[in-house]
Length: 106
Image (cartoon, rainbow, N blue to C red; front, side, top):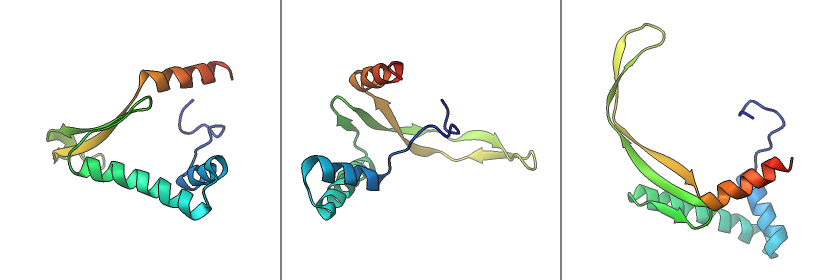
């Protein structure tokens, strides 16, 4: 399946908060604050240059990409694509196995 497939459901932050509300018995405000706080902590760690390891889930890591040559698709003109830092996510083997098992049951 690819991202254009209409049968693929996407979970939003609001739905994640709703799931925590249902599962943990938090009130809706607490659930929303917990989800927001969780993502804020990950973002802040990455901004400090730290990797984030979530055992059994995966790792968020920073990767520096060097400057490289590129081309303007409209004009064909050569341009320099500036060096930048990107965030990558690598799923753990445990997460990959769980998703693979679930997908094969569909």
